[in-house]
Image 1: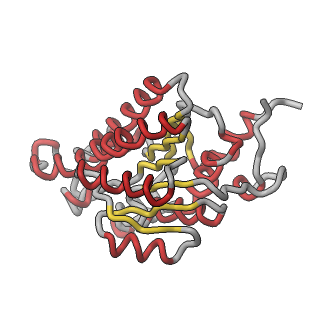
Image 2: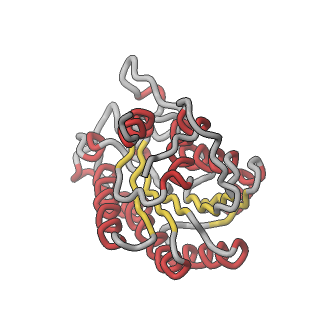
Length: 269
């Protein structure tokens, strides 16, 4: 089947803009950065977006700036908080069509000077290690674990897990952030394998470089490094929520390379 290319999504010439009216999406960690950029793109494409974050007030404030959006408190580290938020989504919106696992914390939480004074793994506190793993890896598991059975019962759904470049996963001084992201990517692949042959799809999406999210302070960046605008995540996440992406499963999509990746999926003339 030919894959449609919505002009609004890719910037390529093609079919009409995507219409996500009726699509219900929950994004974790959506009060800022990549999460907020994806929430905005989905909402502007017509989706109903559930903006979630640890603090209800921040989530509600972010949602108030978007069309068709609501803000919920959701702490991905806490099973009860995850269960409550997902139950609320099903109760108030009748279900979910898209889950975007995005919530994460970076190296600054364990070493504020991680780019200029990297620490050996033995210098990282156990508490700091657990905090990053609990958010960036266990959080993906807990939310997907709660959502996937409901999607299966409802007859379908899509899960997108946000990742990073492979180089970041093995960089010197990047414990525990690197291992947390490597683990999340392995988790995504296993989720995709477990759900193969079902109406629920799982894909990986990553920006393709350092983004303007605050995780890497400008003063600590290598000279000449240009950070990517978080808006780069908009086109691929809207496409992944659209009818054109039906059946797309177990793919690893780099946002900065999305146009080229999508062209390669098209049948040759």
